[in-house]
Image (cartoon, rainbow, N blue to C red; front, top):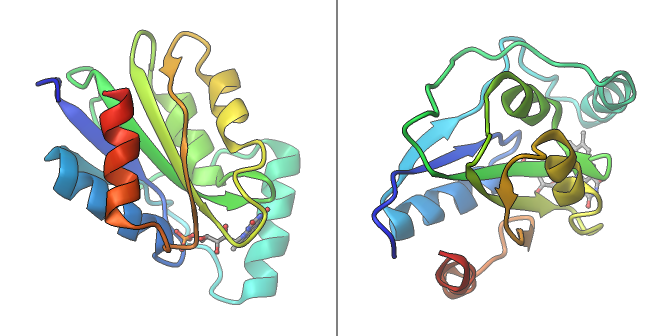
Length: 156
Ligand SMILES: Cc1cc2nc3c(=O)[nH]c(=O)nc-3n(C[C@H](O)[C@H](O)[C@H](O)COP(=O)(O)O)c2cc1C
């Protein structure tokens, strides 16, 4: 593994993506950063699903609680649940308000049965000047540590 400074930035609504992010931290020794919206999403499933749909349609950028200087990181893992066939809105904010030029992005996502859908191609669209690697996709948090390690070792 290279000695690049590694960042693992993730958003997780119900914990699945967080679990994968923590495994990646164990494997890489990178810094973990939780992407957190100022206004938390409703806990009611129907409400969050409806809100997320509106936010996707509007390209809404929810304000985040914390900022991080990503300039010192060369490799950045970005984790998200799949929301409406793409990344969650807080991840849209994170990708938009930081400069990923010349960074290597290692995307990963967790989903509820529909797969990654457009998650990775949409990351490529927002970050055209980054090297976006093949993503790691997990059904909820069912991924085995060995699968995550294999993905990381193949690409770094
Ligand atoms: C608002 C919302 C939208 C979702 N949209 C999708 C989807 O389009 N496809 C899919 O397979 N799962 C979808 N899911 C399920 C989540 O992707 C899945 O439960 C994921 O593992 C949650 O990750 P988290 O625990 O890190 O939040 C959605 C869940 C929510 C709350």
